[in-house]
Image 1 (cartoon, one colour):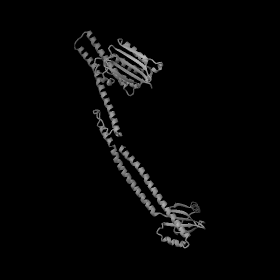
Image 2 (cartoon, rainbow, N blue to C red):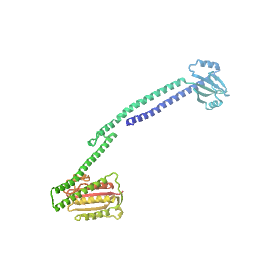
Image 3 (cartoon, rainbow, N blue to C red):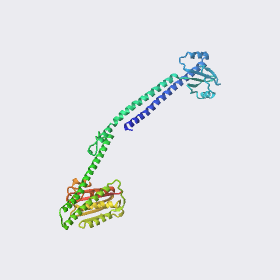
Image 4 (cartoon, rainbow, N blue to C red):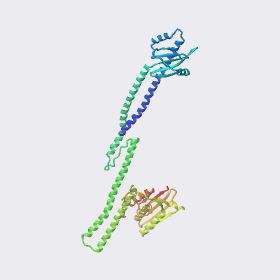
Length: 454
């Protein structure tokens, strides 16, 4: 069901319920008013008849009946009956209609002074009339044709007005819901024009105050993220293709040159060694791409375990010293009294990979290669810094260094692929850590990894 139809039905249902309650209330009060008015009229007739019959000596039952025949105020099928204290009928105004109340009903009238009830279409009122010598019960009954006709007229008017109100409300609800949803239709039309080829298109945010404006603003924010993701993806694919193409082109060129003419075994050996280096470079790129892809997978599952950070970094310094004998890797931790504060929950292999990338990155851009690491426990957590004295990073490049295959303008002379820092950031994010970078050209770079206490 469309929103417009649902809104119209809901609006119509609410108004229908309110209108029904109002119409029923009107009819109920009209019914009660008619009943009370007719009951009072019957009671007045009963008292008047009793006074004429019992107080005026000149009025006999026969004369009273003659008077009632010419009375223009007589009710339809009116009957007034008087009963003495022995419950004997001493007078009846209508010889064709008789009330036959039992003694319990007459005693009830005497007990309550006045009661009313209904027998079929007759409405009857019983009142007590007391004289010096007797207590009479006077019953007055009749059919309120005029009142019932008015009540029927009111009921027909209420029913007709109720139907008209429902129709008007339904039409008005359909019109106003259409107007209310018109901006949403405009948004849908604008969204339908957006595709992968024009992600730069943005929705009109209107007055920027109501809910629809916030919806457009939220959607524009999503488009910003999508556009950025598409741009990064295209850049990633282009850079990955370029990085993979270079070693393959070099390998192909060397093999083609070797096949142009006969060469000495030494020349073939040099060519094969060069091809082997290019193959290692190609394998390195493939491994890093595989690592980045695995870390970016939605179903990545990390096996968290207790990892003591100072032990991990000591292992890394030893590993790098053996791998790069000419490099200087210095670690100066500030160890706390409680060694357990150095333990974090994480994947040891991934943390090893992240810090190894940061150390190798510092060594690669330093001349001579040297990196200093510090570890400090603070009130908020653990802070690890990796500092080098290399070429530094230009200010315009700082915001992009964690993007895959991005390399600064001053790094063209250093061998690399621009994947390592992307891997580092992904691992740090997966562990709920934070990484910051501070650098200046010619003064070196400092990476700060902050681990907050959970």
